[in-house]
Length: 246
Image (cartoon, rainbow, N blue to C red; front, side, top):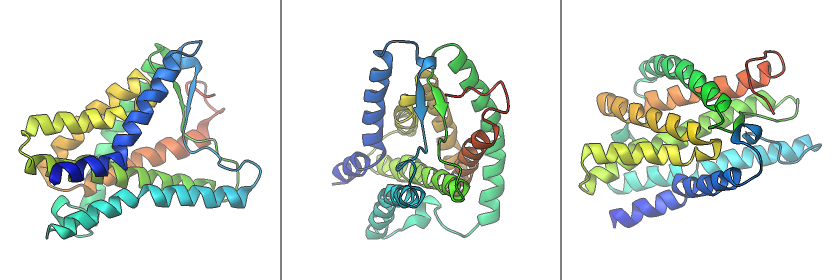
């Protein structure tokens, strides 16, 4: 039952994203031109020229993407524990935020350098973090999108996945590898660099989760990383020559 539950949760969320990302990567590899000549677009407009309809689609996408998190919370409550067992609570908000900020600062600088090298070397597509219209809701939606990504990924790929794999008898090393490779798989649409970078980040996040016993700091770290990436790109594109754009 636990194995079936785990497969269903992944099939409804990031497992399916991993398969989709792999198909996208094959498409990019077989398309004329190098990977760096192609773009991987995030946070794009869903209704160009119609800002209110676009906003509705953006909020719909963010909300529905969090349904697997609600499912995980429901399943944890049914087993008699609840989200507190993976550290998804408000018991230590400032501690979680402080730890998350330190992790984001350490990973963010190294991650940006690795992306620039991978993109320049032709191992990565050019990642376009946002291409939303310049309307009033642009930056709030980018922040919400970043928070949604962080909650979904850290709850499902770290807290829930490691708990279920442990209950299924997986060794800590095997569970770490599974979590890290899964994280890398759904970033494969970015290219080899995106896959490798996120596998490394996934391994670090698993080790930190085991040390702290909480996904809270990881959610904070991931949210800060994505907020800086999304908002920073929006502010810097066309203003600096070191940032690849499409």
